[in-house]
Amino acid sequence: MLTQVENRKVTQVENRRVTQVESHITTQMEESLHYNHHNYEYELQEYMLQEDDWDRDLLLDPAWEQQQRKTFTAWCNSHLRKAGTQIENIEDDFRNGLKLMLLLEVISGERLSKPDQGKMRFHKIANVNKALDYIAGKGVKLVSIGAEEIVDGNAKMTLGMIWTIILRFAIQDISIEETSAKEGLLLWCQRKTGPYKNVNVQNFHTSWKDGLALCALIHRHRPDLIDYSKLQKDDALYNLNLAFEIAEKELDIPKMLDPEDIVNTPKPDQRALMTYVSCFYHAFAGAEQAEMAANRICKILGVNQENENSMADYEKLASEL
Image 1 (spheres, one colour):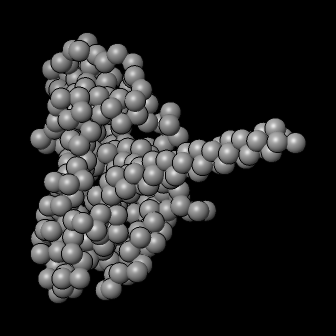
Image 2 (spheres, rainbow, N blue to C red):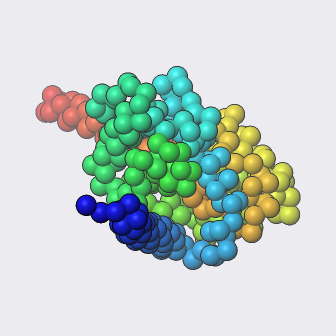
Image 3 (cartoon, helix red, strand yellow):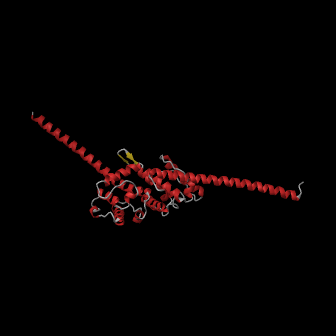
């Protein structure tokens, strides 16, 4: 039997051991979290740098996040409104996974698996996982984006997820000659705006700051909407406002940014501008393809008519012999 003093000493030793073990576990967890966070930041930064030669200071500037939130919200709503709904806060309204699954169904035209209707956390995670699994099934690599982060309302993770959706469903399939995706969209912009004075599209940030490139895109396809000759390069706010208003009223392209977002930022966020410009591609390219198809049909009908006339002439000559 241990005396009371000896019992206290044993208890103190055991408590010290427990404290040491807990401290060791906590240290390991902190190191792991630090490593995972560092790893994600590195992958995100590396991915952004692959897209363009980006300034590190701008990556840390909250302006890009604000621009993306505004643009991505408008882009999502342009599709969700087809299903009679919309989102107000991009990091909150996708947390239960229901509108995220609906968004994917609208833009893909496919049905996803039935969502869980419960309100518990595990129901929300299950729904978001269904959406992420669908995206992954389309060949998209979701780097460090997990359902838990979306359910918890992690803004950067949510914006990263929406960007992968935009890339896959709005940009990836753009193909101009031998270029595709971002390069294809850039080449399309260069081809369409090349003849215009004071327009030189080389990227998806500074090349759009004065608004002339957007006005040129509109004028190239709908010259009745803009008198390009009256625009001034040094009146960026007017040019951008004009382009945004005409695109929204006449082309059904929602306003996704404010002119000040572009003018007052050294390098506007290229993800936001790529998203917005891709809407012009889809609006105009669809019309161009329809026109080309109509021209082909007219040409075929014309050839058939010529063949019928030739046959009629041949039968007439044969009957006169």
